[in-house]
Image (cartoon, rainbow, N blue to C red; front, side):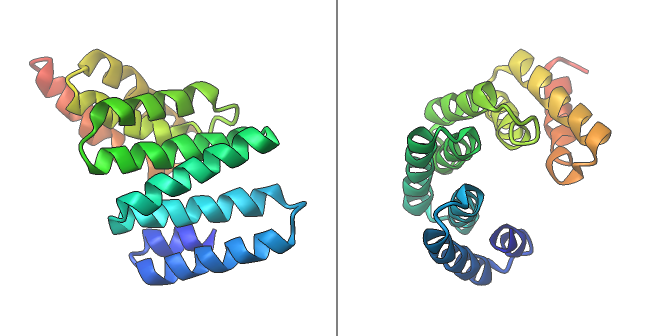
Length: 169
């Protein structure tokens, strides 16, 4: 988690190094599947925030491969999320939306579905699918309010506002 936290705090190099260190430790603790994919996800998230598209894309693929090999849905969700974010960086909205849709579709853990759900809603807005955006963004906002995940839900009202403008309100 430290790699994610440091990345969120803008301490990108520290976040990257902590992700790499945790990932190395995870290789020695093969039974700890969570540490493996969560540290790899932190590396991918840091790469996205840092603007390292190729690293994010490759990390997303690694997470997907790990998820398939170990039947780990969370790893797969995170893989689609990170890969979608890397597509977003190049304004490749179609592939990004496909990744976010798949992540939301397969997310068995409702919390894990919120990150790609937010990005999916943003992608829909940018792609002109206002109706699709409204539904997923409202879901993210409702989840945020109900379960206290404000870090995810904070951005949703901004894009819901854009939807309202697009609808003439």
